[in-house]
Length: 132
Image 1 (tube, rainbow, N blue to C red):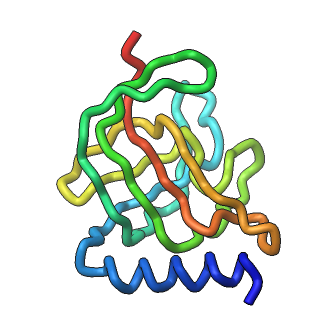
Image 2: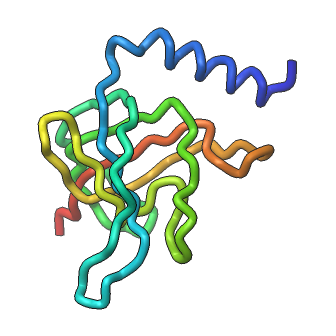
């Protein structure tokens, strides 16, 4: 078994074992600017995820400090939305709504990339805001 197969199998197992802990996150993918300072979005897609609510400062690679309010872990690959100019699979302009209706901007996204598909095996999304 190749290492990438081991990762896929491990994530499938983690997904099935944590299913009772997962909640539904509404994901509206940003498509393009509307010319008025806003954006247009694809229809919302409901995605199962592990959600950890916690206020925590996080130092970004560019030196900024952000206060994260939630960490959302998607254990399943997210298909690219496909619009020009967006970061896949989750763009910082996307809207993610938690089960309680709360949302904050996407502050950071982490993913281990599958070399066969070019998509993340999984994605970890941090919601939050700059502190300064």
